[in-house]
Amino acid sequence: MSSIASAPGAATAGQIGSVDRSGLGSDFATDLLAGLSASPKRLPPKHFYDAAGSRLFERITTLPEYYPTRTELRILADHAEEIAAFIPNGAALVEFGSGSSTKVRLLLDKLPRLAAYVPVDISAEFLDDEAARLGDEFPHLSIVPIAADFTRGFVLPRGLARHPLAGFFPGSTIGNFEPEAARAFLHLARRLLGSRAVFVVGVDLVKDRCILEPAYDDAAGVTAAFNLNVLARANRELGANFDLAAFAHRAFYDTERHRIEMHLVSGTAQTVRVLGRTFTFAAGESIHTESSYKYTVEAFSRLAGEAGWQSAAVLLDVDALFSVHVLRARGPLMQ
Ligand code: AVJ
Image (cartoon, rainbow, N blue to C red; front, side, top):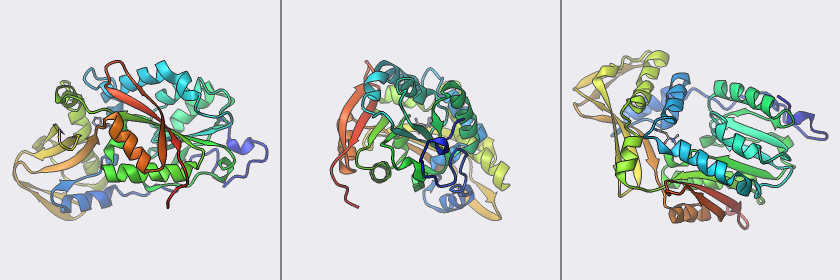
């Protein structure tokens, strides 16, 4: 892997070229205790992605019912050149929540003059592997991995400041945010990337529940295993005693709020111990583990507009299942 620190004259912040883990706290315990104490019970979806959860998610992306990944890949493959044309030569490309780098490869192939690729991900393990692999494939590209929870904001290495910045946020991960939080995140990205930035965002589209619900409740049970893994993770990491057989995966589309909700439903009245505390479940009581918001093209453009971006292009697949928005920074930013 080459490093941006080797770029002549680049001012660096000392963390460049290696994975910076300083932003990672163990907030799983905190969030689990708070979420189980809340009513209704809840847990943020970012905790799905330990090593086992990341593997299960990779399997989800290959399921016949789960259309988002393959559809977005198709859009990116079909329009890579058009999207790349919005990203200036010498830019640094910051990817939020990079996971596996399959999607960005399609853009990198069309960006031979990119100065740096900056994958930001909560999973340092994934980051290391993918960064190493990408480094082999793109030997002239500086790769600057940052292990951070981007939902909390993070600092870019100072060496990147002199480059025009572009953001990449594929996968409709933005759908995990409540609309207010999505707007706040878009605003944060606008501040981070600067006044000449371009931001490429993948957004899942509103559609019939007949397509949406199977995508989050597949026949092979992989999504169920993915959802239940967060309880297994609590048992592994926090010594909790969740009985996985006593919880069921449930996913449904809320047509009014335009969101999929995933829950873990307790089959019986039971108590669970986590870090010395006891939590009671009524029969049928659930933990709300994920919301996955769906947007129309107009609704997402409006949201981005409220966060200091303007729409430069919107690309869809032929069946209008998924959208890729190319946004450009607009006007002076209100703090
Ligand atoms: C990674 C948030 C985009 O909402 O479709 C997939 C996560 N959850 N199946 C999504 C997920 C269940 C996924 N995102």
